[in-house]
Length: 97
Image (cartoon, rainbow, N blue to C red; front, side):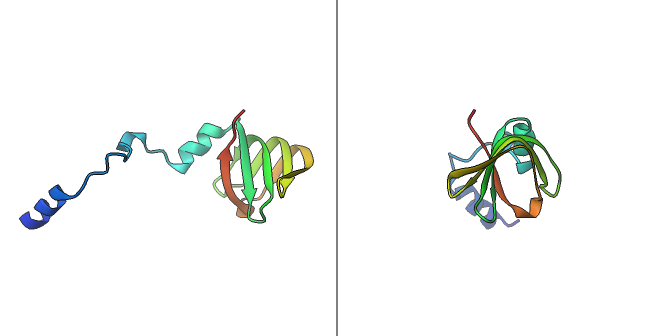
């Protein structure tokens, strides 16, 4: 690296709000943290499933317990156990208890 490039890098603004390297969490860390906890799973169709995350795999196939199905924000069904194929999942978010 040339000395001019080094000087430019030293003058670059530092983002004070950026998290330190050790505080960064990967999506895998998040999924491990929410296993056994209440989650909201949104499908590509817009349907939401709320329940306890029992397990999931690398394809994001999901097994949930105590599951409720919401369509357009309205409760439609309640299931004891629910299995969702991963290619239908838009996102998984944690839910407050």
